[in-house]
Length: 86
Image (tube, rainbow, N blue to C red; front, side, top):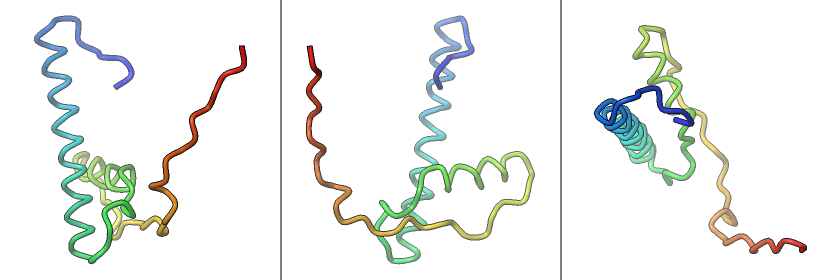
C-alpha cells in the first residue's frame, strides 16, 4: 500500500476499501485461530495469517497450521522516547 495504483478519486477510494477489507479479514482469521486454540491473539502473526490466505486466493495449497509467536510479557511496555541531538 506504499503506492496507490489508481489515478482517479473513485479508483483510489475502491483501492483503499479493498485494503481495509483484506486487513479486516486477516484480523478476523487471527481472532478465530486464537480463540480456537485458547491463546492470546498477540501470539498470532499478521503475516503468517496473510500468506496462507493469499495462497488460497491464488488456488495454491496453503499451510495447515500457523506458527505461533512465543509469549512476550514485556512487549506491552512502552518504549522510551528517543531524543535527537541537535
